[in-house]
Length: 500
Image 1: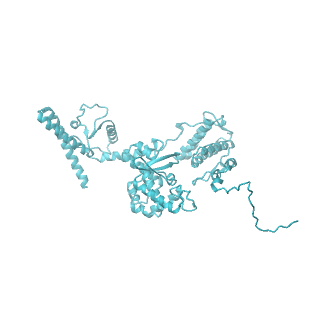
Image 2: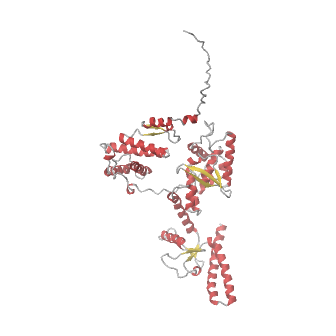
Image 3: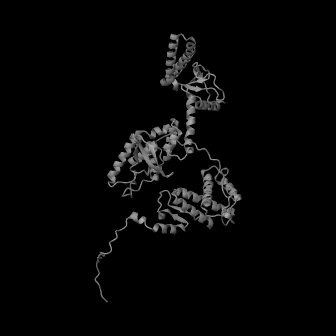
């Protein structure tokens, strides 16, 4: 037996086999083990999303362990895997799984003999609807459980996963509970004035969080899209106007929103600060402060929410009643949408700015606009052709009908200097003679048009007198007299408002 001395040994690489460099962490994550990971994880009742290469701070796992029926669990897993593969968010996938879990628990209690989809029928679904109404009536969960289960049945049919599913097993629009009209969640101008105050914004102890707040206020982005903004998030059009370019993760598309020069400058300053911290560059505009040596991980939206609450306490923000205000990041999105609608920005433009997928959500803000316009209409002093005030009692029995008539009149009988008070069903015998019509109504917002109109009428009368056209003089003298009465009344009203 030969004893060899112990000590460090040096291996010399073969000249015919090149030495393989060590794999980086990112390369190790991209190994072919991804497929085997899915195979290993798919059979478990709890999927660990990180093992599948899916990172999401809001959710770490998807569980199927509470689905008692093996046939239903197998279909639920297949549905979840397919939805994840299409890029659907893990929260949405988990929501669908919870809906299947709840349905499975109902079947275990109400229809324990069901051994597959073939044993389901309309009668079972109606019993399930009654069960949901008893437990969740009037809540968002009620509609969610029905809608997700219906999507589950639809996907099974589309992909042919189980041909035994009866055609009658589906939900119809009448099966869904009536959706409660949500009240607008915009912040009041009293609160926004405090939040936008430069002195309060200066109380942010982190410039990144201050910039996030400014983007939420000015652009209406969702917080999940804001914290994931790339470093090169500013784009310019042909005229040099800046836009914020971001990825709408909910709709899975890139979107643009116009911004002002001040916000563009603030983003540029943030990039300069990042360059000082990470000279090699960072792909995200708001990197996480700790455990982020390469600057690739963005700050979590939950971290910002906590910082927002602390900032509100430092600023002592109060509502109209002197009570502390609770603000969530999504409040700024609702506020921007409501502000734009109330400033008469077309609804299609608001939809594009907020990047809504349909007009249904944008119309939610428009409902408040109608109320605001009506309030201004009721508060404005309205006069007729004699300069007499036209009253509209906002609490009277005909208030709603009168407002509806004015809305229709605005939409179908637009005039350059007022509104027609004539019912739409009745034809007008005074074509182009509104200032001699007793149904004409106007407000101070049309004073510039009235003054310009008066100047034109005076010129017409002067020319008619020179030509001796007496009939033309008489017609326009009446219009001139009415204009003088209207202008005088509206100017007095405007002067009174200015003094106040």
